[in-house]
Length: 255
Image 1: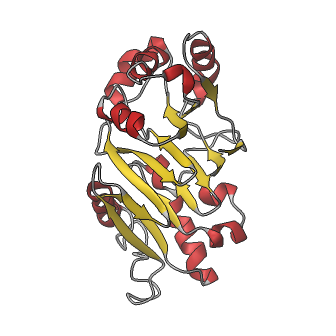
Image 2: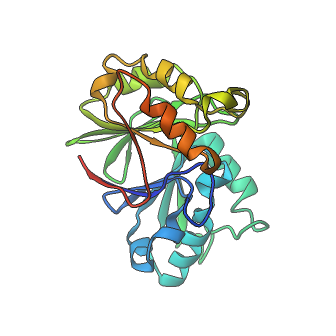
């Protein structure tokens, strides 16, 4: 399994890009930086996007990648998500007001995008991967994911604060190679983190201890707010008994 980091921040500046990862050059995990970071040829090679929730920093480039693929004659792009997220995309995003409904363009028989609904905690085939969605604790319906192949599994927290069931599912998954884990604010901003459904280093450390062997799991941190990047990195570096790495744009992993 190959993982490219297209976007890994909780906000945007010329040096920061919002959440988006690319698995095996085929499957994107969230869409915060697809068109800003991928050349047209790479956008055409995409086959699907797994969406954790409907907040704009995780879906924004679905609009522009759909537009580019439609003009480029690419096949339908699978947008896989839970029912509430798909409903939000249909009602508020691809709604012919904010953006065209590319599930009907060029036609209903040859759409640019197709939706695949994922039921919670039901392993589901998505483009050759087995995907399990797990509800996590955010301000809207949101899911973490475990993506499994015959070579192992990759876990994605999505946006979340302290949660429980996700850790049980991750522990039960076969041969988990890495965890993509959000942390957004420094400890001094705990009230804001709690209100917005995000982690600080102190709540992250507590949550990761719910795993059976947190020291053994490569935990790749993303979604840090640009204003607090240095402070959050310092606080994470001080945590003991964990296997943490802060992601950067352009990171490339093979598991």
